Image (cartoon, rainbow, N blue to C red; front, top):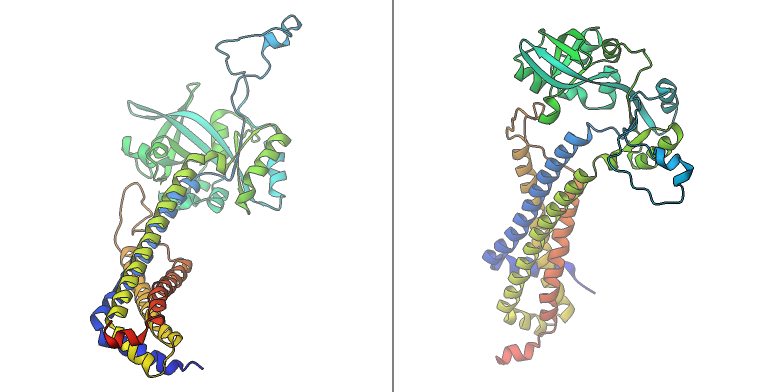
Length: 420
């Protein structure tokens, strides 16, 4: 029967008598785990921030009328050319309206679907911003502002004013930060906008919007849906886009295909809209995990080398243990115990160091004009990373200790005592 108190006592004595080697091995685990926790927490936090920056501004499903060439050209409709090879150059898109047909019934239908968290109508208008002699081209998006705030991170990007200010203003505009800077405008000022037909409307700036994407902030602003409909001279059912947020985002593409066939509109799922960005995000995460795992493996090799040297130095002690009645299994368990003690102590210290460094990073100021809502570096405190860290610490020390302990188990004490 194995006497664990004696085995662990001998393992502890060996570790304390070789304090320098013990500390070196423990620090190898500590800094390996600490570096892993710090790196993976910071990098995944940063990746999440970058993902949210783009994905939060992309609906799960976007319905709109796509401008494209007609599938049936006049030559294909002529019976005289049915059985010949036809080549048509410079095909022009067909004349089609940007308005979604039966938009209000579609919205009513979508809101009744169990997987739909919300659906908001939008009206996008090509306009010119006028300020003195300055004229800038851009977009004015008519929205149901309170529903947009509920379904997206729009409120987080309002750096001046509030959604309620826009809701309560019949002639208000939420101006893009890039536009406000270029035209030297601020909240409370008035800006004139001109439609493509030349009609000019004055609007009061009730807030400044900054998404963090300069290409958007330099051209895009928001107003109430009814305000944009009135500017364009259109009826209340005139809607060019419908944005849908789902309960289960994984069903976005299948539902987009269904809606496209059902309502004869272009339905773009979030995966299709952000295919390139998703690829880049996956590569960043792959690099993060690859570097993190490499740190843990390097720490494991360090433990293996130190335990190998420790067994080499303890050859006579092993011979004495076997000569006094300890079996090869007992000797193996002694060195395995040393490895696991190093793993537990080093792993726990590594978690504490990793958490402390993560807190320091989390509290480090990070201010940029492009991201006004971000004040410190992003850090991800997912408990899964800490569980992975301690499990890998124990696993790596177990493997690193098993091979040298197997060697110790098979040592012949007679040969060591004789000096051969």
